[in-house]
Image (cartoon, rainbow, N blue to C red; front, side, top):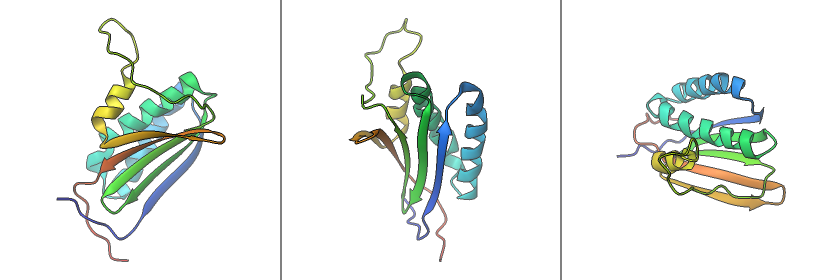
Length: 137
C-alpha cells in the first residue's frame, strides 16, 4: 500500500554530463533520496537517471536539466535536453554492445514518456512510492 505524503520534495540540477562525473551524481541522488526517506528506491532511481544521462552524453550536446520530484505516492525523474529526436527502445540483440538502456528504464519504472518541447525534449519517468513515512507540515 502506498503512503501519501503531504510534503513535496524536489531536486533540480543543470548538468554538463561527462562519464567521469556520473559517480558523483549517483552519490548525490542516492543521498538525497535517503534524506527523503526513499533510500529503498535509490538503486532503481539512480540506475534510471544514469541511463538517461548517458543518453544525453551520447546523443545530445551533453548538457541537460535533471529534476527529481517526490509528490504524494509518486516519484518523477525528468531529463530535458536540446535534441528533438525521442529515444526509442531498440530491438534486442544478444551481440550488441549497447542499446539496452531504455529496456532497463522500461523495466524499472511504472511509466515513462517523452515530450517534445520548443527547445528539445523532456523524458519523464514515474516510479510508485510504496513505503514512505507521512510528514505533517
